[in-house]
Length: 173
Image (cartoon, rainbow, N blue to C red; front, top):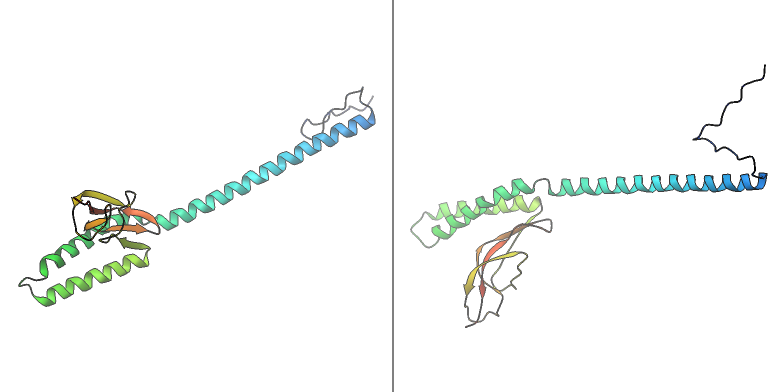
């Protein structure tokens, strides 16, 4: 009995046609090897790119994970600002106003440690990307298209807009 010939596995080597010379077969096999090496390098590059993208997404998630919580806390600062605005200059206990002011400062300090910064000041240029115009005002001494009055401060979280500043924009008559 003749020993059975095992066919070559399609994923390990290709069948050599009978009409190929040994040099042609070697050249064809080198081309296949180069193609497989290219596939392997591309797969490796795709894997590395995926790793980098996942690391970047993880960092972004960690950086801005608290965004919704911080957004919900901002009205507390607004209420403290209102309490201070109504308490100053009136017959309100001075200690009460000082206490509210200290509370506001402590709260702003905590937010700043978490990357929140307050913005919006009279006289700064109006920027539609970070300011919400509520109306127009005329203030002498201010240039056109600058903030005439800040109605509500805006906040950024590590460079990303958390809440736009609500302002009145200066327009000359």
